[in-house]
Length: 273
Image 1 (spheres, rainbow, N blue to C red):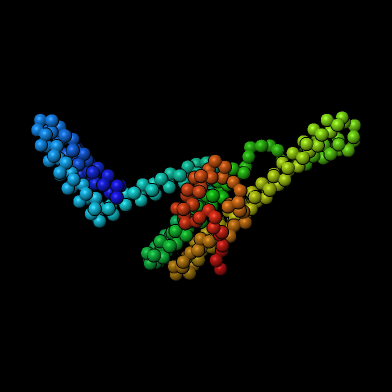
Image 2 (image 1 turned 120 degrees about the vertical axis):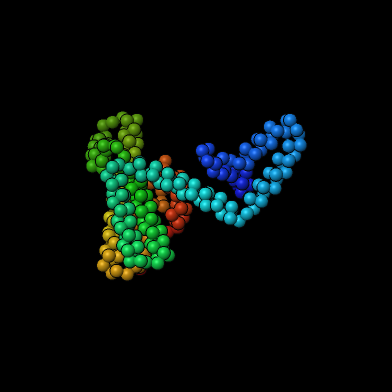
C-alpha cells in the first residue's frame, strides 16, 4: 500500500509549456509557504492532502496504472541485464545469437500472417524467447570456459611423461623427488580438469547446434503446414548448465534472469515428445 500512497503523492499532470508537474508536491510546498503568513493554511493543506492522496491511492484504476508502470520498469531492468550478458560475447557469438533471434521472429511473423489466435502467438513467443535464453546461457558458459591460456592437454601430457621418466631414473635427492612427485600430481589434476572442460565445450557446441536445428524445423513447419501449432521450448541438454559454476562472475545475473524466463535453477530440463 505504501507504494500506492507514494505514487499518489508524486502523481504528475501535464501543464502546457511546462510539461509534467507533480501537483501534490507543489501544493504541499505552496501551503507550506503560505502557512508562514497564516498558520491556518498549514491545516488546510494537510486536510486537502489527507483527503486527496488516500482517495487516489485506494482507487483500483490508479493501482493498476502503478502496477503497470512497475512491471515496465522491471522488464526494462531484465533487458538491461540480458544485454549486458550479450555484450560479454565475442562478435561471432553475438552474430550467432542474433541469427537465432531473427529466425524466431520469422516464426512469429508466419503465425501472425496465418491469423493465429492471440493466445497461440503469445504462448509460442514465450517458448521461443525461452529457447533464446537457453542459447544465450550456453554462449555465456562457453565464453567463460574458453580461457586465454595456451596450455593444451597435449602439452600437459608431455610434461607428465617427462616427469615420470625423471622419477623412474631414481637419481634425484629425496627432497627433489618429493617436489617432482607433488608437481606430477598437480599436472595430472590439471590434465583431468582440462579434459572435462574440453568435453563440456563439445557438449555446449552440440547443444547450440541442436537448438539451431530445432528452430529451423519450427520455422519450416510453420511455413509448410500453414496451420499454427503450439511450440515446446523444453529441451534436454547434453551439457549440464545446472552443475558447477560455468558462468563465472555472471552467475548472479544468470540466476536473477532465470525467474523471468520461467525456469528455476534447480529444475531439470526434459524434452517433450
